[in-house]
Length: 187
Ligand code: SF4
Image (tube, rainbow, N blue to C red):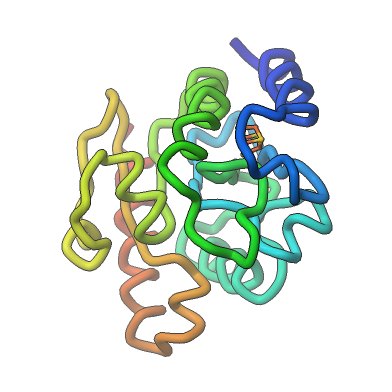
């Protein structure tokens, strides 16, 4: 598996109509970044700016994520991969519905197989709950690493929540990224 596989998956996603989210999307936001870093960020789904630009985590929350990744991991956006659980924007930025998540799961599974990341960082409640198959809140899941599908999963807050939550939440995100960095170095 490698770049060709990801490109083929992205081409499939670009014309996917497997769930109702295709009816309201502007652009399919498949994912972007390095295919070799061993590090994958997973968010819940595209927002308005992402839907318009076709790239995950743009706008203010993306800028915060980029800054924290650079300061705590020493990596620029081009040096890790970033994707979402669903590739099309849920209208009004609502959470993706279970049937939409299920319909889109093959793309994330394909990305995991193609990228084979050593460390996965889940961003926020939705992504973390989907990946860990739990209803527990992010606040009880973050702060530690999880063994997951032969990899290390590091849950952290969604950067949009960190923007609202202030310095305390940002400090916890920083600690989670340090956890991810140590896990990456240990693999
Ligand atoms: S969200 Fe996923 S499953 Fe639904 S239309 Fe978009 S690419 Fe297809």
